[in-house]
Structures are given as C-alpha cells and as structure tokens.
Image (cartoon, rainbow over all chains, first blue to last red; front, side):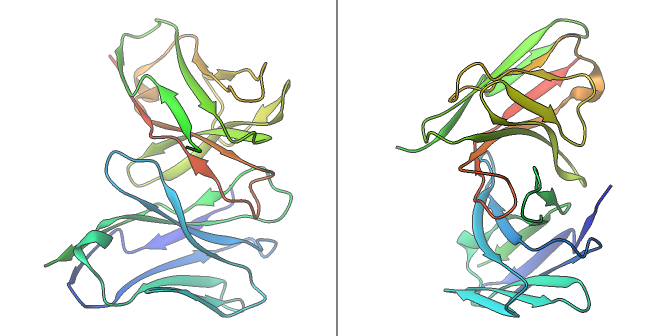
Length: 112
Length: 114
C-alpha cells in the first residue's frame, strides 16, 4: 500500500512560535500534496495544497515546503496561535487516482 | 450552505446487527467517498463513487457495502458489523477525482460495535 509517513505524532508549541510538521512519501507519481486541518468533533478541511512544480507555497501564516528529490514536504505554521490547536493531516495523490493517501496525523497544541 | 451531512452522528450497536450510515451532499459533486479514521492510522478510504451507479473499492472495503442511486446520496452499509469496525467514519465529496480536487468532509459518525 502506498504510504505517506507523517511526524511528529504530537506537538506542543508556545503561542507565537513556529509549528513544523513533516511528511515523506514513496510514490514518485504523486503530484498533489494537500494538508487538512481537523478540529475536535469536525471533519477534516483543506488548509493548503501544493503541486511539485513549486518548492514553496504560502497562504497567510501557513507555508508548505516541498523537496521533490527527497520526497518530503512539510507544513510550517508561523506565529502559532491557540486557535491553531487541531489535528493536521498531510496527504498525497496523483491526478487520476481515486483517493488521497493520508498521513497518520499530528495533534498540535498551542499553549497560550 | 454547501455541506456534506451524515447521520447518525453517534451509533452504538451490537455485533451482527445491520446498520446504515447516510451521507448527503448539496454541491452537485460527481465524486463521493467514505473514509474511516483510526488513531495512528490517519484516514483510509473504504469505498468511492465516481457517479450514479458507479462505485469501487478503496483500501479497506472488507465488511462494508455502498450504493449510489442518486447523485447527492451515498450511504454506507454494514450488513454484519463486528467490533473491529468500531471507528470514526467520514463521508466526503468533490467535483472530480480525488487527485487535485478539494475533498469536502462531513462531520463524522462515531460507531461503537459491542
């Protein structure tokens, strides 16, 4: 089964700090890498996504960094806020696939 | 409001008692799917549907059935639930195939099989 490996499993960051979550994939055919954010009691929601033709994508305080040669991508949350406390999932797919392959999730807690 | 709805949100049942979890979307999406979420395993796809009357297996289809008789509805059926199907279930929809399209998830159904 194609895998996406995510780390760390949990993360505690102080308010204003930088949160970094890493993912690694195996399938070189993957060409779409989204991050989903999930609050307790809710379904996941798309946060930000990247395609491998760029090495970085930024939306507000959220940045995806992508390293195609290393088959790794990461989510950086700048100036982390308590409202960012949630579970974050990386995922990957290739155009034409029927499903996203999700990482195992990272539970982020931002302390005030 | 554009949304994916699931019912019930919580369900406790016993081994072998057939159950159905409903899913409905109001975005006229072609593609719908079911995932289960388990600690440490992320979300794994159970079944998906490309359109009405077109369904196929995902990564973990054993013990589940689906149907797509209407574009907006995609129920998940457990004909003989077992304790290993205790999980959090999510329905999702998108305009097209999962690769490259934003998946819109429902609020989840937490199932406990005794």
